[in-house]
Length: 313
Image (cartoon, rainbow, N blue to C red):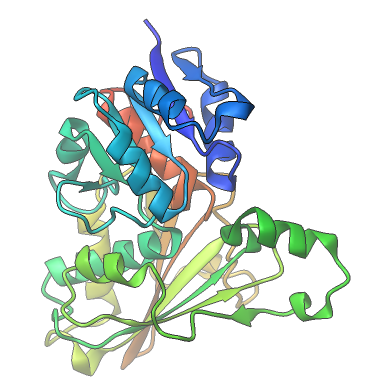
């Protein structure tokens, strides 16, 4: 028997990529909405109730509206928007977050898909807080450099049209210090102080790397690069999609440069520790369209349905 799946918002970047993942699979039946009924609440409600799993690839307000349409108690929603990432009753769809998270995803009918920047940040910080290395009230900062596909179809079209010299260099944004990923970055790490976060969009399609600077003097006594690395290795032991890079390995760098795009076209996250005797920079990189969006959503679907979580990824 095939599993029935509906993508509400299938024309967006995330929805299209989910379709690409699922179209290759013979265990999935994709329910499709007629183009002229894409905004018909009754037709959307029918498909949301008919599917075992529905992906909401919509703006926040539209995702909330879609969730309110569902009447079938057995229908599972995986929301790719920001709307429900810290909402009561919704499980955060990051199975590597902590022990027991997979079981919560498996049992839940309401799963919020993490954001791309926050996925990398949370995977960097949660192990350090759980190990007692970083105090919850420690003020932190983070920088993320990402490909332009994270801006959706309009930004992709802008970059690929060419002719705009301003797009040839990296562009910091989110300078109001109120980026929409900050609430989940704070809540799901256990931090009590929201980080100062600056994302930067670069002139490449996809790939993302979040970096967090640390001073050993502000961390738990005795912390050094080896202890940071050991905390990551212990937290992610056995995780197929989390790759903790060997400490001090020259292969982590390409001619002294860190390759932001090295995880593209995978569902993998690479975590690296770079350090001196007094300071460290911890870095996580991923494909912002893969583990940062559509890949993560499919991974959560697989877990919820009791399948091999890497199926199709």
